[in-house]
Amino acid sequence: MNSNKIILLLKLTRPINFLITAVSVLVGVIICAKVPPSFLIILFAMLSAAFSSAGGNVINDIVDIEIDKISHPERALASNLISKKTAYIFYILLIAASIVLASMINLNSFILVITANALLLLYSFYLKKIPLIGNLNVSILTGLTFIYGGIVAGNISFAFLPAGFALLINFIREIIKDMQDVEGDSKNGVITFPVKNGFGSAKKIVLIASIVLIVITFVPFIFNFYKIGYFVLVMMIVNPMLVYNIKSLYDNHSNKNLKRLSGILKLAMVFGLAAIYFGK
Image 1 (cartoon, one colour):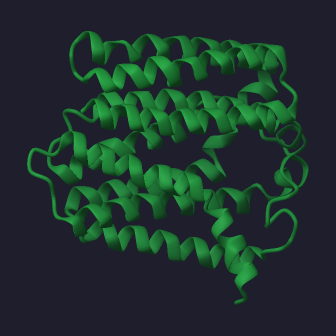
Image 2 (image 1 turned 90 degrees about the horizontal axis):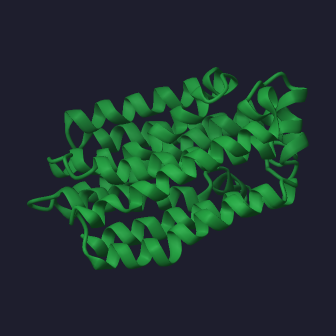
């Protein structure tokens, strides 16, 4: 296999998502651990979660080839730069790696990764066709990265709040991504929330979820869960990005702007992780 094909395969995994997933688990371990696990255990946890997420992205691209030919023609599978057979083999390797690494941590980690892989597979073939249910499924899995970190640390009590943050911000991003994919989804019989209810209703969902998220961001500081570093980053960077996202979405729902807003939300997730880390 030449280097170009390897690069294309790596792009299927969404490298930024891969990194965010790994760091989310690390942050989960840091905020939950009374006695930090060994470096090797933390590394296994980060990689097993990231490989699981990467596998989910690969199988989703395999299932969505016809949709992506319309919505994302630049992607490797949609443009026939990678064959379905090669992608399936890559998917199996990623999932196998995630399961093996999780099994080397503890039983609960193993069960969680098996469950996550099953839900990602179910999402790609079935759940994504159910308005909001598919979005919620992916968002819950995003939140579970922090719970996973808590499981590895042996204490999940401090993981629920950041898991809720991650769930909400990813839910908002999932709706925006569905808006971006409306043309391809509707032509291929995938009835997402924006396809069924239109952009006006989708914007209202984004608005409500964003307001709930912004309100919740005040809770950790008010109840002294996190230190001032959290408050500064969230109030100066994360929340302004969320407010800007709402305004820009209502001003312009062109495909180009939706893609940009999805990227901004991903960046907001990164700053959110930083806020939780520095607030601990």
